[in-house]
Length: 491
Image (cartoon, rainbow, N blue to C red; front, side):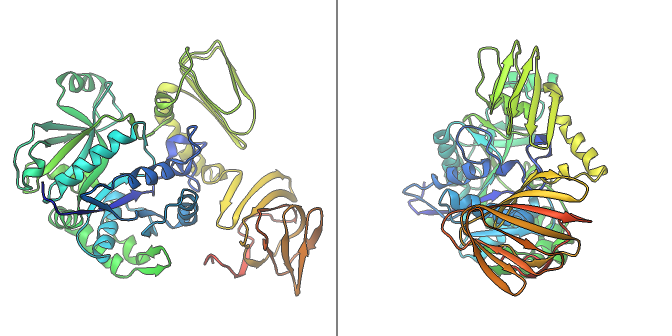
């Protein structure tokens, strides 16, 4: 191994929608930003913290590049700041184009930042039980990738799983990438998700691992491979990146140009084409209690269970039940006499499913979309860059919201065509712009915003501001907002 220090560039892919974990995961607040265990950290936060541990005497680690959706940009920053992790940049996709264009944006950004770092590409929504084993495997992969190899992490299977793609590998050889990969397995083939009999055969044969979707390779290696196998994606993404606009940590590719980029996954665009080509593709095995939490059954698999195989989160009572998952978020949920069932409760939806059919939860999301129902996209409690609001009651001509504004934050200067509002301060201090007047309100004080009046709510204090807002009028939709000024660049 060379004594030269290698520069690693972590890349966290945070653009997924997580439809199979509805109703907890929604388009506006997908699974990577959820807390699903007792760590009190979201999956995204756990991913960022894991990657901070990659540094070694021969490995220098840059701050992470995040690739995500424009809609989630403030969620990304807020959650990273909660765990004291400052990103190098947040690349915002104006429209989803799958993982091959996403990693290409990261590779182009990494090159623009200088040098030819080794990209360590991971998803934002996986769990890993053994962080030490995870770190050791990625460090080994990085050293193997230094000479130009493409390295994928293969999960050592512990059951005949039909929900994952597989990697068939053979013992390592020298290869074009040099001595650092001599003891790293050679990838012979990527195979699609198998049926149960095939998965059992893969497990028995022993030379198959699950495809984790985690890749380690130099930025130049990725761009060269993409130029070779999918020059259309490479060229179109370069055009979009060249039209990028930067705003603090946010990097926005050209919207129209990015819309023209063909949508394709990393696997189909490059990885599955590498075996047998001029590109040396390797596999480093990982046995670390990994799961991609692709559906509620995977959440049950990864969760702590009682003697009857039941996993519970929140206020749950389970009687005479076995192998169930009950996830309660806002109230007591009790079950009696259930086997192999999933129950998930949120303030505005309850989902009950056969555990073996948990992949089909995405069909519920599709039905919600076809009916244009709000439960597809948003929770009752909606996060905003300034805080959040919770719609606690609604009628034909009224709506009641509980609103929290972060210290130092403010809503936009705005007006409504169809509703008036009453604001009552519950805690904290409110600075209220009401027409041409600016006033300070404290606990138990209130104000009235007439229909059509320009207004703004701000928190000048050092503690969160909470108010109750009572809306009344002929139309109460969130699109009845005319913004005149906005700190967060919203239209």
